[in-house]
Amino acid sequence: MIPFFRRIRKTLADDNKPIKYLRYAIGEIVLVVIGILIALSINNWNEHRKNQDDVHLSLFQILNDLKQEELFLQEQKLSVKKSIDYLTNVSKGNYNAVHLDSLLTYLDLYFYFFKNNNAYSGLKATGKFSNINNPLLKANIASYYEEGYETLIADTQYGEAYTNNQVLPYVIANLEPDTNYLTRVELVLNKLKTTNLKYIINYQIGLKNSVGGHLESAIQNNNKLITQIETELKNQNKERLTI
Image (cartoon, rainbow, N blue to C red; front, side, top):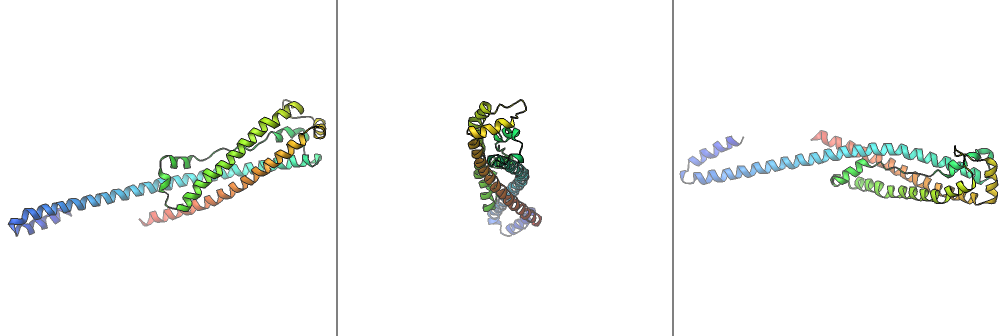
């Protein structure tokens, strides 16, 4: 295409010999500028497409992380509920509904949160998180991993500290755990009447209720974010097909 235009300009320039070199030079400059602009435009388009491909892949990876995390959160929610039900029965004196010799297991059981944010961390570390064009989605992803994780980590840290500093010393000193971490039923019944065991149980119930509420919120936010990312990925696929 460019050689064709050059031939036309050369023919026109030959009709007027005194200014043919000036015309030719100006034409060359214009062609070079046009070529540079086209090259920059193509390069920018390619760079934009590459960034969007990276974002698309990262969102897909975040989606997988969220789906795996949903399973973990659901498992933890059931575990916390099971522990609350057991301890509540003991606190209310419904001893026939539980195995009192297993009390130590439920007293020593606290929620422990495991991060599952590799895709999000990678997107932030490379600076490509800003390439997400959907501002609402970007804000919700950041909120889920920053604020949501902070709450669950705080639950873990407090639960671990209370268990290690309050529960375990009491268990070791008063409930005589055997090698299977079981205790004697009659010993439990006696300690419920004569020591602060019931206070520890009730406090653990309160802690676990708080954790259960945070887990429920995390699951709801997880499901909303999954839906948003799936919608965004579908929209991106449509855009890619039209290009």
